[in-house]
Image 1 (cartoon, helix red, strand yellow):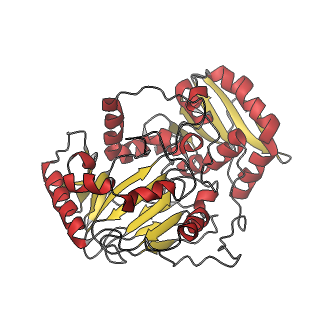
Image 2: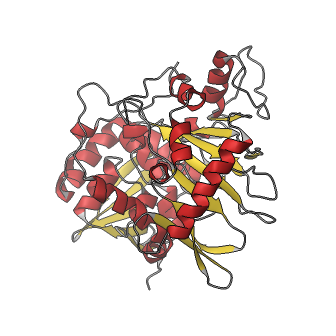
Image 3: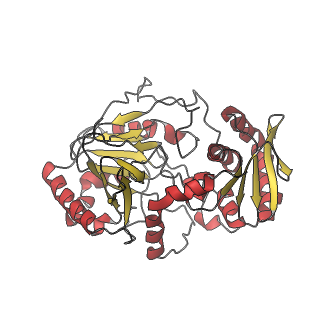
Length: 412
């Protein structure tokens, strides 16, 4: 079994010029997937889309059951302006519609921002041949063919084949009692100290504001470097066995494990601004699904999480659905649920599973996120990106709401 659904290699990605995209890449994609993309467009009831890049515009619209490309802008279309580099990243799945907005690389010039975000699964149908999800397309079944019990949780003593099957079907797991109260208390103390040391301009933390405008650190990046207690747990096989649970080879990262480091989070009360209580999203929501998915994201419950303290929300089966990666599409028929955890529990979700952080309303909670990534595909090579640049890009996400607002700004 495998959750590996990658279709692209890093080494095949290259800069594409606007004219190459408009005159060659898009027509070639239409020759293969015009009907598939149009079906998704009609299902989602989206308008045509005008793409304008460096002084040239084309419009994508449905005609007679197929997606077509037309020269020029259209008055009945949603419209965006972006440069050739951003367009190149979009058509190669290096950046999503939301990913471009989060990095101020696209601006809405006509229509609704929600339409731009809604076009994301249509682009994936066009360029990657992934059907846009339609109601009834996904069923969740147990190993005997019956309905999967989504309320089920597991312990380390349960059958690992049963755990693996559940994860493949639902895209998430809840594992009870993995770490002890004492172990979590040590991690909690380290997190408190790291949050106290954080500064808004340190490039290693995210900040959020409460109803009085007071800013506070809510996420410590690279937390594994600041917590000896956590560093020990990350090497423990109570966690490490999850790198083998899907049947994939999560290899190639730290010490050959594919480990992705760790971030420490606190979910305070009364947060009104900033990235603390994230809305519905996929971890590939900024882009690169076809290069990375599925990875595994693991949440270590430093404190428990329930209906009053901001439990994690998931949409079971959404890792198998080509839906928009930011926000919960109104056409999505898959129900959501909350994962109620206790101190020392783990949550696990696929990077393509739709999930969210509910805001706590009675008491805050703490959680550490880590995970595993897939090994590189045969013959693949990653571009060398300095560690400092990777960290800077991660830290900059603390202010993405302003950039999204800029992309969505309506024009006359």
